[in-house]
Image 1 (tube, helix red, strand yellow):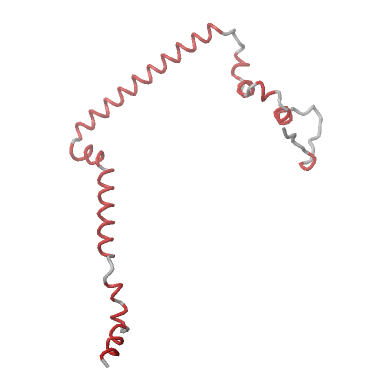
Image 2 (cartoon, helix red, strand yellow; image 1 turned 180 degrees about the vertical axis):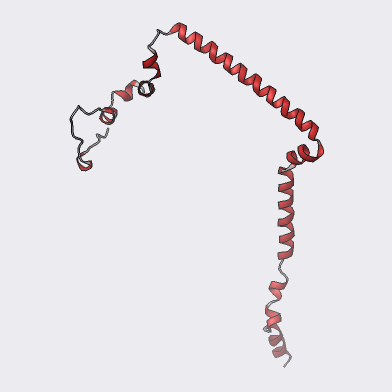
Length: 144
């Protein structure tokens, strides 16, 4: 009879739930919360330092960053001006209208090899005045 009582004890609701009652869910929850706090705190350190620990130093760092950025921009502008004057001295003068035309710039962006392809010619071909466009099912694009 004692074996039957062991079976009854093991199959009782409390006996079946022992596996779940011994789980480590609380430990996992504490570890997860700890990891979240650590990640949030580590990524917030610059904010905490600039906001609460050293606001005067943050203002000085911000001013230094702005000065450095202004120096870099001035150097870039000077380099562009130098490159533009050098390029304008070496290339022939073009008309302002042709140089400023978006279509002209787009055409110059296409390499000559691609400009001679059938695909480029088929997609950039202009219609003659009075020409009626083809229906979509009549259109064909040549494949290379």
